[in-house]
Amino acid sequence: MDYLYREGSPISADLWKQIDDTVVSTAKSILTGRRFISNYGPLGGGIQSINVDSISELEESEGDISVIKGRTYRHIPLINQDFSLLWRDLEFSDQMGLPVDLSAAIQAASQCALKEDELIFLGNEELGYKGLINEDGVIKLQLSDWSEGENPFKDISVGIAKFIENGIVGRKALVVSPKLYVELQRIQPGTGTTEYDRISRLLNGNIFSTPVLKGDKAVMVCAEPHNIDLVIGQDMITTYLETKNLNHYFRIIETLLLRIKNKNAVIVFE
Image (cartoon, rainbow, N blue to C red; front, side, top):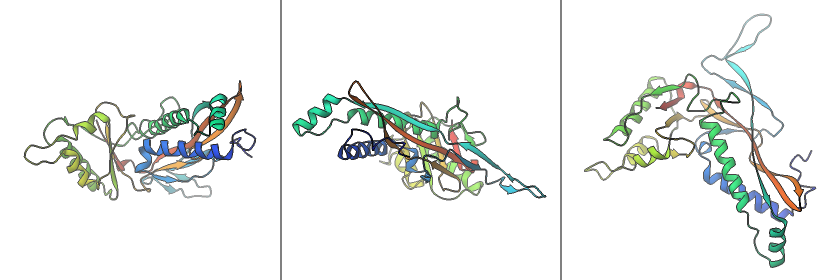
């Protein structure tokens, strides 16, 4: 079934390619979670739910009838964002041999990417989804004043020590709010080195910032796939909605779910 409704649309194959390239390249420039979280999939748009395991509790019960303990099943939510292209703009581009202005697609892809990161980091309280920042049971550490002294380096060092204490090893990543990212650019007196550079060496350069985190927010994860992954059902793609008043309407869609399998692999600084 062509649920993307491309084959019957009046959009040419060449323009579809331009739209796809624009949407994907725009999203990649904004997405933060996918820079360090491993993808599981894509599994296909028809996959509606997936198991979420807690590896510390995972076992199969004994008896004539057994179940797997430490496993739940979650619905994979759908993210979408609409945009439109005016028929007169397409006709003008065709007549004059000029590229189609895809600013509307760029804006929609940007919003879709931010929605994805919001789901990863903040979850969706209304729908019952938790993110990295507010997941129950993750490690919480006090955030010092990062505008003073070596506090950022000390906080992250304490977090890494906590990982070691809990036997968490592997690739680590730190994600901070824009406010904290700016404060990491301070040069330590007499060293010529910023706090960002010092912490970057601890994390092999895996420091990221996202606008979905506000104020004094930071989260550090051990991003190995056995600790955390991102289930991708339908990866980000554009569908054709309808023609209305001769204009063309599109929808960018994706289905995905964050799975935190080991809560000791997530440290929130607050």
